[in-house]
Amino acid sequence: MQAAPGVDRPVPDAPAGNWVDRRAPVFTRPYLRLARIDRPIGWWLLLLPCWWSTAAAAIAAGQGFPSLAHLALFLVGAVAMRGAGSTYNDIVDRELDAKVARTRNRPLPSGQLTVAQAAAFLVLQALVGLAVLVQFNGFAVGLGLGSLAVVAVYPFMKRITSMPQLVLGFAFAWGGLMGWAATFGRLDAPAFLIYAAAIAWTVGYDTIYALQDIDDDPIAGIKSSARLFGERAALGVGLCYAAALASLAGALALIGVGPVAWAGFLAFALHLAWQVKSIDRRDGAKALRLFKSNRDAGLLLFAGLALDAVIARAL
Image (cartoon, rainbow, N blue to C red; front, side):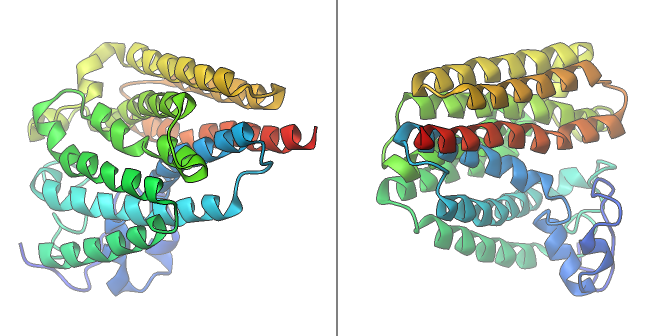
């Protein structure tokens, strides 16, 4: 498929009136959409386990508020690596994307960019991510590089398994390990539990996201947990969220957090319960809203952990 320079085709699942559609120079828009800059929820969901783990490590280390340098590095890294992962995913999935209403206007299937252009952009974003990663200790650098193996296989999972969301969880939850490793230069039981919690959380919210495509996916030959759970989608998401909360509670108990962290945990749990109660597998627009609301859910938990770290240091 040939590129179509100058053609501006917004994607239907981007927020209406986002700054990319309104203000970015036209020639940059396909690249920004390829990196999902018009849909920031992706990098938020990649970032939040990093911040949870960083805040939990701050409590365990008695250091007060989580390292601002680490929080900022994880923010830049999440934006860069979310963009790189999305670009790689779109290169691999360009033919499948052309068959699904929600994705056929993406830059590659719509012909706004060539594969070579997308590949060059992928390398650029990966280099930014690498520049961020090498700011951490050696153990964290090696751990971060290890995540690339999971990222590499994820796009192919929707062709061979009904639970590609689980593989996505392995990748998106990696920050649950990274924040702890960046603080201590090692991994301990709480970090593994935070990682497990983030995996289950990812499977849950991405199942909600997949409800948008439940009619088109069979046509394109795409498998998903939404299709697997079928009419019991709410039950499936609820079980995933319950597993996330159980793992997270175990991590907080091992660390010995205070009441403010537990209050953040409770707010997070109530938000997840509200999502499960609100699921309507036939309402794609509502599914997208619920999916996006996980940014707020994750920030509630982070706020509780960060404030608890400050209080614990002050006492």
